[in-house]
Length: 209
Image 1 (cartoon, one colour):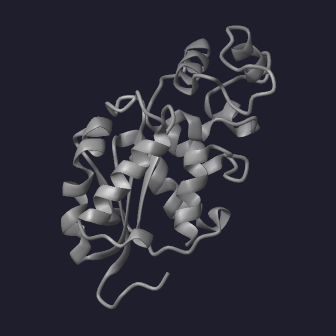
Image 2 (cartoon, rainbow, N blue to C red):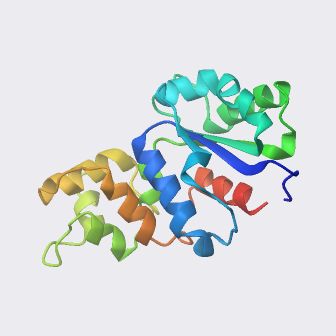
């Protein structure tokens, strides 16, 4: 999509530091893998202090002034913690997108991406990079097998049923600190092709437009 003269391409709002690190890593280091070409700089992203619930309730107000400088806008947050847990992620997205359109954004120029349940869903896969980044030693049993013992990674499923709890359990087992850098490293190394999460696929598709 061609940007109008004098406007930057895309402004993104995220809910927390983990999301900021993942999105920045993807857009600064993984554009080739994502099959996108985006002139992205750090100033094109805002980490909103209101976190997930604030992103849900304040999306229109956050992005309204950005219409003067940006052609497109995207808001990304987790369904868990948003205050809209009683509704499907797709309904939350539709509500936000309708409000953004009502505030003056063109329908083809906005996207709400609600991660269900949380950001950890994006970084889990059967890739060996996940185990390595989480500090899982070669002498341990396979990470997927370890998590399956507590029902956290059901057989035949592409990722754990509770991605956040699974990550916390894995790093606790190997006594690795659960730090924000984990998300940056995972975003930089894990195959984006293997991620079939609905919200991630929408995120990529909107970037490719």
